[in-house]
Image 1 (cartoon, helix red, strand yellow):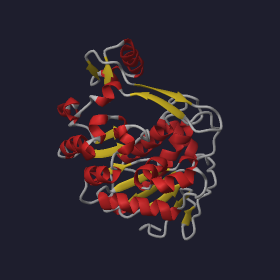
Image 2: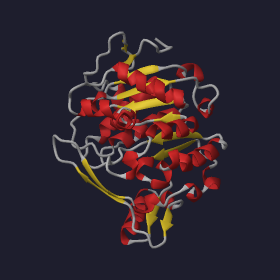
Image 3: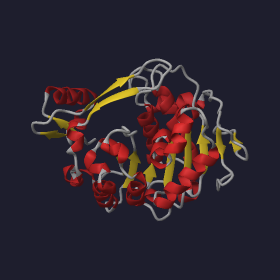
Image 4: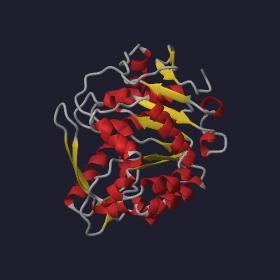
Length: 324
């Protein structure tokens, strides 16, 4: 794991927390001299959207030269999170992020990207996200944004209409967004849909680093939708990260897309069973056992006309899915 913290007391606390989990987690942490660590205060009241109060700190000084490339060359997936919260990585159409991904891909490592919702009043909220995606996504193998982030960046008018419940999300909108992102250059698009689960759309895999881990014949031109698992929701902090972790864990095991999106939504469901971000996460064998024991899925409110239900995996397959 790699990140940048400050040389303050909060930075020391972060290191201590990580060391309690695994001492190796702190080996590549960068400590910014005379910097105050970044922090986010999450206000999570019941029955309403969360509010984030964020101080960027070292996130705004973190750059491509901070990456210890020699230490990551044995890795299989390089996952980068939240460029909208890091100045060096969202400015100039994400050119600093492109530098990292280009160098990592030359090591034959799969690149994965997650976003964050930018503050509309901040500099990140005012950049041209079209240009960012056109520049960055050709270097990204797996792109896993949330639907809210994606709509805000690519279709703000639609974002506000859906936020105000004047319109709703449907599979046509999801297909349009995914095709647009694939046209920009990425091969796998997984859109997190909150309580509606996870939507997956893929392109041709053979020529990407993904083919080193997964079977292209199982992954080419897929169109899938995985509903959420039934659970008692106590908190949603960290759910998106947990969903991504489940997806990447199954992918690293060479899993087909049906299994990847199933484990993704399962780990996300475990996450919401605790108020904090990690307290609900269980060991992988326990999560898989829970899935195999017949864990109930939630019903979708997204219309699935012309989609086919897969009774084995309890997911939906779109009309353009190449394995129906």
